[in-house]
Length: 477
Image 1: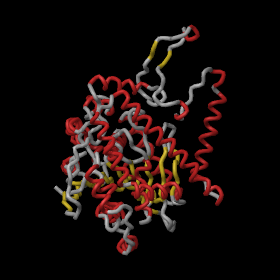
Image 2: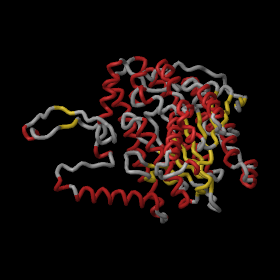
Image 3: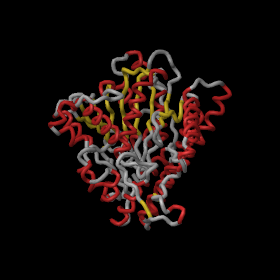
Image 4: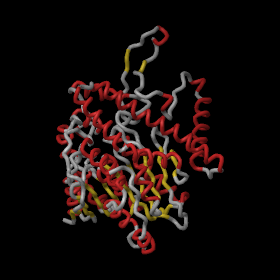
């Protein structure tokens, strides 16, 4: 097996007893959570409508649907009260979309550039409010006990300790002229992405399509801001893809959104200075799982001869960071750490769907042999002290890929936790082993870029060391 272990100097690993994700109070709560999936405005396809009897005479002839979990004002879709009013709202909706698209895609004048960050701050605040509202709505169905209070306090302490870094990253995210925020790639809620563009625009640049993590529940495109800033400073374009989260959507919706975002990157990125023949796909945590599912699903469609909007051959390599690829092996693990089986199965569309959304299992299937042969080089990064998703998840998936002929390897970082590689280490400044490995792979074969990387100025520290060590101790992940 091509797997190697990197020894890194790091504060002593502390095993956190806190679970990484949302838990339920009882099995009955799972049924309530599943009811959330019935919202017509948020889910498409096979979503089930929940109906209640009419409460007034005016509605005797109509079926009344349950109130959507998400306000219609926060959704891209609109259902007019009568057919007579259909034309005008649809026209207004299209006009709003065109205005938003022009705001994010056009060449800015100096005055427009000054106004743009404030408009984007409003959009980011709206999306953050949506995520928070969905999370608390979910908790309302699950019930909150003393253990959840302790975990939320731990999360609050973790955020406070890293707050100096978050402030600096947030300022860059909202006010940097190198970022194109909220670029629309689809017509579903949350179908937006952020583009991080290098200052040097000479020649086409390599591109990383990045799917952020968030336990399938609190993912958001801005979570990739630190990585986007780092890579753009090394002349790499980064596209952070947003997607619907649970309970706004289930795993099928997430994979569909990610695939549509990847399609946008492959087909449109040249307009932003990217090289469409030098595109890399990357995901972190739940985002690594979603991205790998989207990649494998696309390969299966191509092998069957189905018409697709993007080709797996356009992806030069797949980078998975701290991801889980066999859900059968993770159900009990997540259950023991607080993401109860009932809720996890609701996210994954039932136990019968675990196989479909387990890439490790799918690549073993002889029926998928032709699809597997289309997969690009795969590199899986993981910390050995990751208790949210064990590092064996990456090791085993790499071994399975190798056994079926895919070029794959796992890169393990000794003593690193789930958040060390993605947050604490980048905020520590100086040399970041994961980042240097990642850039080295992207710039392999480009001697000029490799020379610039070797002479790059070390990144500054964003958070004092003591605060980073304390954050590592109290981290609920």
